[in-house]
Image (cartoon, rainbow over all chains, first blue to last red; front, side):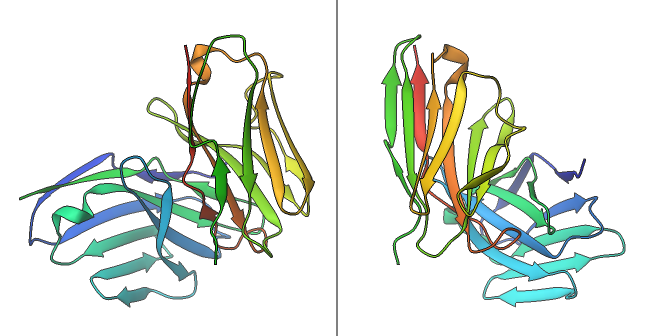
Length: 109
Length: 113
C-alpha cells in the first residue's frame, strides 16, 4: 500500500528555522498537505501544494516539493513557542488520502 | 462557516458498555471519514463514506465497531461492547470530494475503564 514517512521528533531553538521532512511513495499523488495538531485538539490544515508545483510560500511557511524524489518539506521561519505541535504530512490521490505518523516539533525558548 | 462538529468531546465509560460517537460534517461536503488516533498506532483511517455510502471499511478493527451515515449531515461510529483497548481519540473529518482537502473535527476523547 501507499506509505508516507516522517521523522518522529524535531527540536529547535526559538527564532531558528524548522524544517520538517516527509517522503511518500504514491506516484499518482495530486495534492500534498501539512496539518498541525496542538495538544488536545484536532488536525488543523496548515497549507497544501498541488503536485505540479515545486514551492509554495505562505508567510512564515515554505513548502518544497521534489516530485522526482517524492520528498516534501515544511520550513517554518523564525520558529516560535506557539509552533510547538505535531505536524502531519499527507498525500492524496484519486483513491485515498494517506497520513504520515507525525513529527513532534519542540521549540526551546 | 461551522467546521466538522463532533460529540461528545469527552467520554468515560465502563468496559462492556455501548459507545456512540456522532459527527456532523461541513455542509456541502460529500465525503466523510472516521479516524482513530493512539500513541501506539498513530492516526488510522477506520472507514470513509462518499455520498452517504460506505466505500472502504477495511480499517474497522473488528465487528464491535460499526458506522452509519443515514444522511448527508450526520454520521455515527458505534462500539459495542467497548473494551479498554478502544481508548483513543476518534476524529471525524469531511471533504468536498474524495481526494480533496480533508477538514477535521476536534475529536472525541474516549476512555474505557
